[in-house]
Length: 195
Image (cartoon, rainbow, N blue to C red; front, side, top):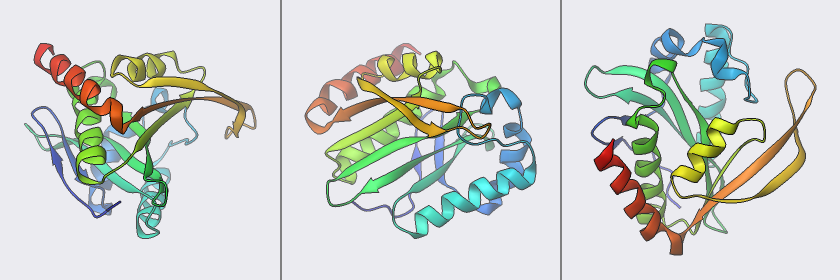
């Protein structure tokens, strides 16, 4: 699977290869505490955001991630971030995650189109056999979004992670596999026509 930086452009969102040049834009919209209540990351300052970006770029250099800045193409405003990660080249498996969108752009067509662009790239360009998504078992909004796009819920991994506050996180795994992609693609394209 080729994890070379690429721009994925749609109508309502553009996913640009993440760079430190996006840092000011990410800080402008990404220090909202509600974004980080159910995530493994706690971003409370621009220093935290810089560390978050630097970690993503280190994973990219290691060949296991492809991080993006999520951009509003109409204004050029950075509105969030997402990435491919946990790449298993041997098994042609990759995860879509580390996704956050500033509150103003939540519950719009942005996330639907971003997932469409990423899934299309994963299956049609990278040759993935399986795309995984996961979230906290407590994150009902994220779980509903994954089901809405056509991903299959596979199960709960109990005490899967330790949260920054020391508590345990149960993670719910979802996936889309290559033979399901044509139906998921059609579903997403239909959703985007309605949005």
